[in-house]
Amino acid sequence: MATHLQLFVVSCFLLFLWVAPSGVDASWGDQHHIFRNFRRHCLNTNCSTEIKTKAFKARQPSYLQFLGWDCWSECTYESMWYLTKKTQEEVNRVPQFYGKWPFVRFLGMQEPASTIFSILNGIAAVFMLIQFRKRVPPKAPMYEAWHGYFAVVINAWLWSTVFHFRDLTWTEKMDYISAFSLIVSGVVMFLIRLFCLKGNSINIKVALPIGLPVAAFFLMHAFYLGFTKFSYGYNMKVNLTIAILNSVCWIVWSIYVWTRQRYAWKACIPILLGNLLTLLELGDFPPIWWVFDAHSLWHGGTAPLAVIFYSFIIDDCLYLNEEYTKSKSFQRKGV
Ligand SMILES: [Zn+2]
Image (cartoon, rainbow, N blue to C red; front, side, top):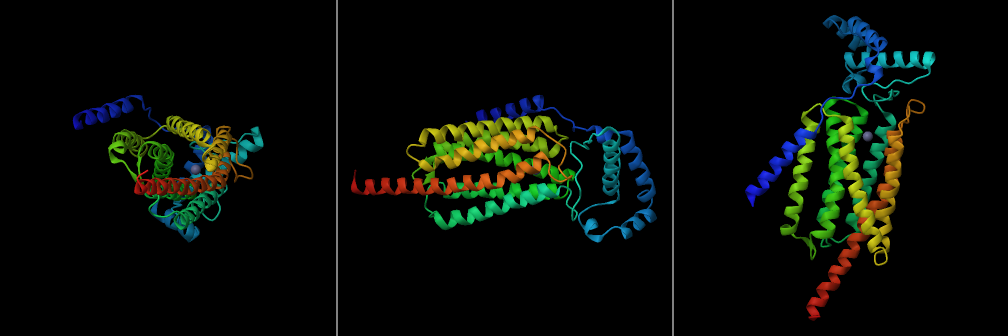
């Protein structure tokens, strides 16, 4: 059994390395000679010697230094706006830089709207976790499992906040890995809810064969995101595939159980609307007022939708608990 499993995991890993493309997507803004020349000049003027760097730091507000805005990143930021203003005036086009639109920095936040919306999403998750703990008795089926899910959600919004606050290689990797864990956890929760419950606890004999391949797949993609120069396009395809699988599972299940479990719309509707919001993200556009791009609006929309889904979690746990209590009392009566 163990050797078959090891063989399976190794085969998956080799297949994964075979199909996974590498390389970071560049944009025409960061390839443009005006951007590159301006930045080279800025770096020579401010960052090329220790004395120049010290003088640059003395001019820079201390909170920006604290947030990791070093000489190099300040030059990149200034060069980005130099080219953006030029292309706006001359050809009425907005360039992208390293796969992103230019955003106005606010209080050191690189992408203010996405940062604030990520915080809102995190607050919504914490608030609904508190509601969950208030309303659902600890002996209810799925009680611990949903706690695990909430931990994944809160972790994902924490890293989303950090990444949109300050886009660095390591913050980006943490955000992408956490976002991936959030998508995978949706499928995992579905599998546990449908196939792994035994009374009010999880049947390990069923959960292990289902969970191990999912965990192996998660670790492989997390490794790819964390330790290689990953492709944004490929990562998006992987996330979209799992998100579609997750949506289909929950929507079909909601429709199937709706006549018995009227609250099931709370799983179905936010997922449907969430998919519509994702379409908004696919139709990318330059930021409105240099603040609101499609990605930030998507983050803004997910907060209220997630609250509906969290409310489903509470209702479903209460429903399962009622069913479990009924079955226990039937057993006691010997029915
Ligand atoms: Zn984001």
